[in-house]
Each structure stands twice: as structure tokens, then as C-alpha cells.
Image (cartoon, rainbow, N blue to C red; front, side):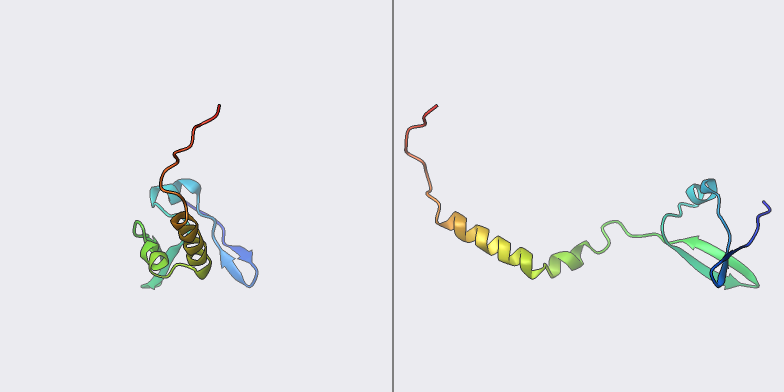
Amino acid sequence: MLTTIRQIGNSRGVLIPAAFLVSCQIEEQVEMQLQDGQIVIKPVRRKLRDGWFVVAAAPSKAVLTQETAEAQDLSEAPVADDSEWVW
């Protein structure tokens, strides 16, 4: 396929057809290398659930404060409701 190199700011770029991107499973990021005078573009494979445990290990202070407040509210709640229900 013959394509044109385009000026993009101080750099240059090539438009990659959508069918190529789908076929190579390229989404948002790519790894680009120079090998023997050729530019090689490879998809970045993100691991499933990558980064989940980082957030779980260090939850934000706002979340902890909210959870603590909810826990205190529930600890003071009555265990059972013996009153009659009115419809």
C-alpha cells in the first residue's frame, strides 16, 4: 500500500487504515522501534486487570473517611424493628 507522509507540527506522520489497526489489535498505544533502517510498530498488550491492585492497596483518604462514617452510622442502628408497619 502506498501512502503519504504528512506534516504534523514539527514531526511527520502516516495515517494507518482502520482495518490495519483492527487486524493488528492496536488500540491506544504502540511500541515503536527502529530495526535495520525500518520503523517497526507493535501493539502494546495491556494485561487484564492491570493496575487494579495499586488502587486497592492505597485507597484515597476521601473513600476511607466516607466508609468510616457509614460504619459508625450502621453501628448505632437498631438490630431489629419490632414496631408495627403501617400501610
